[in-house]
Amino acid sequence: MIDIFGMELKELETVFVELGLKKFRAKQVFQWLYQKSVFDFAAMHNLSKNDIEILQANCTILPHEIVILREQNSSDGMTSKLLLGMPGGDSVETVLMHHDYGYSVCVSSQVGCDMHCAFCASGLKGAVRNLTKAEIVAQVYLFNERLREANAMVSRVVVMGSGEPMLNFENVVGALDFLHDEAVSHMSYRNMTISTCGIIPGIKRLQAEAKPINLAISLHAVRNELRTALMPINKGYNFVDVIAAAEAYSEAGGRQVTYEYILLKDKNDSVQDAELLSNFLRYKHATVNLIPANPVPEQGFERPGKRTIERFLQTLQKQRINATVRKEMGKDIDAACGQLRAKFAKEQEQKR
Ligand code: SAH
Image (cartoon, rainbow, N blue to C red; front, side, top):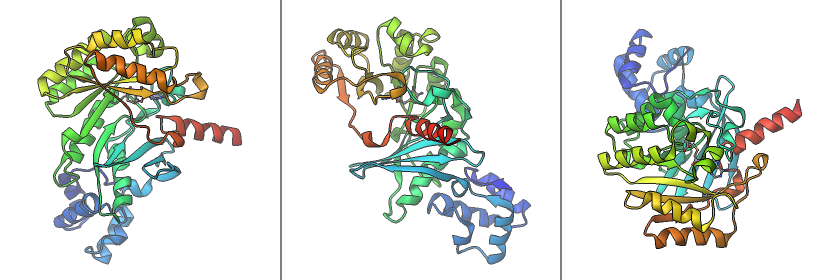
């Protein structure tokens, strides 16, 4: 069986000709897949019965093969999180967020993660493998399929789910290029964001691509020892150098960089921390996105109280640093990366 999802039109045409189908049929199927989000050959009614049979006997369409293992919807109906079972048995999480400006999807880039950030549930078991380009695109299209009735499509993608996108660069950027294609989602690069823990060669490589993709840096601490304790990658790529690489990216492409800063109670949430953070980011093209931590029970991290969060924000603003507190979406649905998958894995273990 050949899985045709995520193939470029040219490749699809080659496959069709090899199967003895007319070349122009490939374009029709391409439209069904990416304009109409239809993933069942039987429903593609401009194909002949015979063509459908040939396709069914030889080809699969990834979104049709993915099993939805779990689904959680936030009580306000604005966030849905899916735990997807890939054909080989691996599972990944993906989240749809409904904003007033449209729909955005938070996609995973790897199964698991090898970065071992202390507060994160994705890396509890390490990285299993990179997701393919098709698997990344499929996360967006599974939601497009659901939005079909509302005549809507996902208009923004953030690569901020499980995994470190810069360690799966080709497939991540390949997926974004595919979504950018006019004949696919025609999504602007400006509506795409890659979030990294600070893999400097990846930031440089993205800069060389010269596409207006937004860059987000998971900073989380600006005291060296603390950052290393929270994010071991800091030993290889020190955060000072990461900020410099991000600033170079921003200068080259004229895009702001977003710095994510998880607020962890009594760890990195003091006024001194906020002042130090301001010192590092002053005069940079930077926005700080404060994320009140989603507690991960396994690791014993807590979220600070409202007052502390407010105080941190005001300290940054007083120093003229652009900063916002991340709007809470899906707190009631284990929306922090890796939490649903970790919970599911634990339940499966307990059943055994
Ligand atoms: N590896 C990439 C992208 C995936 S993580 C990166 O590090 O940016 C996406 C974001 O979720 C990161 O900012 C990460 O630090 C954050 N995150 C992880 N665990 C979290 C938690 N328990 N609460 C809040 N945010 C968390």
